[in-house]
Image (tube, rainbow, N blue to C red; front, side, top):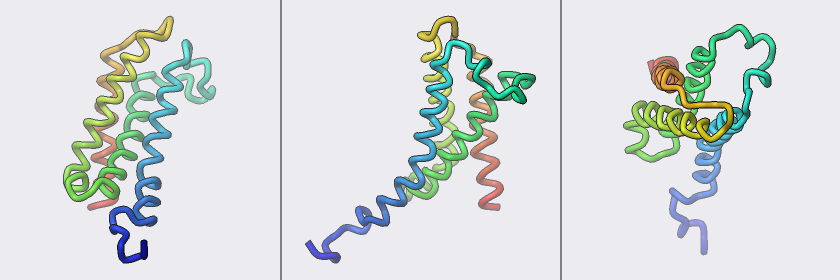
Length: 137
């Protein structure tokens, strides 16, 4: 097969682009999962984070996930994904937050907390909207 027969959407550049934009949110989500699997994650945090409310940490955590999802949807999910990147990022990060709370039910002594999910959703909103405002004024 010569170069002209390769579809542009499956070019090596497209594969690199997909990886470059989708690997960060996947790795970040994996890190969230690992933290959620710890019975006492507060013991694993750096000491300078010890005095910060867990709700603020949830907000920051999911703002980061949403920002990364927004980038991926905006630049590596086709025309429809780009057009709806803001809402897709917010919904994806919030749903991941919900699945994370469910995951914690199975990690003794942790439990699901609807206020954590609220902080996750607010973080998802702020992360995606903030990144969009910064990068696409």
